[in-house]
Length: 275
Image (cartoon, rainbow, N blue to C red; front, side, top):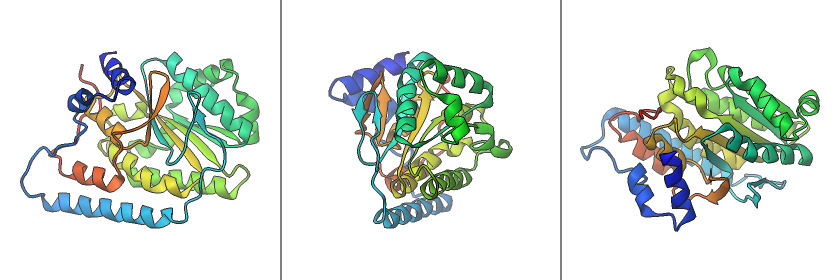
């Protein structure tokens, strides 16, 4: 709750610099010596990915349909992080987002652990989302994280990026054209192999999203993820939902800048909140 209160205060009052200090939003490298060969390779890979994204963005489609969250219409890059501290708060935001997508003809893709699928469906239904009809039409998909993010019990950032691109491209060539997604990021706390690359994936999504007619929403329980991860989540998303409000994110960094800084760290940040 303390982490959530600090975020709400920061985004509700002039975006206090104290928040940046608390969560290290400045991304100051942990060392000042010359980078290792491995770090240089990661840096080059980051640059390659971002340059590819910039080239493709010249042909990027604009969002053709209205997208609103928390009562506010969104514009520009729509890779959004949402911080919640309860399931009720989460679905108070998500259900109108899902309902709007179904009403306007988006494909709606939700990804979360299979253990909470029944609760997910029940909460959508109670919120007025026509779940069964949308599933039967192929417009709504409820997908297990075990078959996407954690296929074969390992997270491979580039594999997941290819999976996401396949979903977006398939929608563009199919009936619904536009896609809105929601990924519950609790799967990352299982500490399975590759989960330390979560922020690499989040950054690379920003080279993919501008090429497609899509809105991508990532949900994080602010009480379960570490402060360092919360900072990185903010750095890799164009918009943030906190306290039931959506904001353009002043802490967002372009992918190449973020991945360069990430490459210079001595060790990956722990994902889980130790407290």
